[in-house]
Length: 147
Image (cartoon, rainbow, N blue to C red; front, side):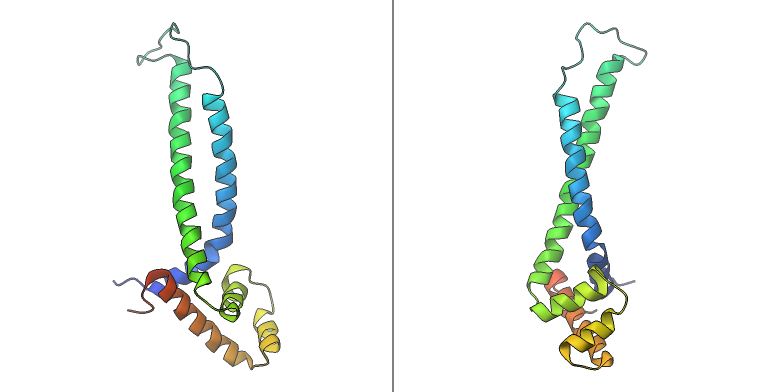
């Protein structure tokens, strides 16, 4: 089954603000984990190992490092996704960015009527403008608009 690039693009737009919020949240969590993991002293070398060969403190420290690395990778992936959407949006004109924002990123009730009034067009024309903006965004984001 071939990938529907326009659906992927629309999903990227709908998730854009949530991903930006996730980046902030992940950055905070990474700072907290760094301070907890590296800000405190390392586990004592003379700690008594528990069953399994490591001390409890050492196990917690290793788990914290592992969690920190997983959060850093999630941040990197999310950042790449946010930057890719922003590059795609930057390739559009202001009107197309506003239409995509109104339809997918920061959608509010009455967005079609508001856009029709702002651009002095019929609502049916707003939907055509949206479709064209999605095609242009998809092309800018993925290099393909349709399969």
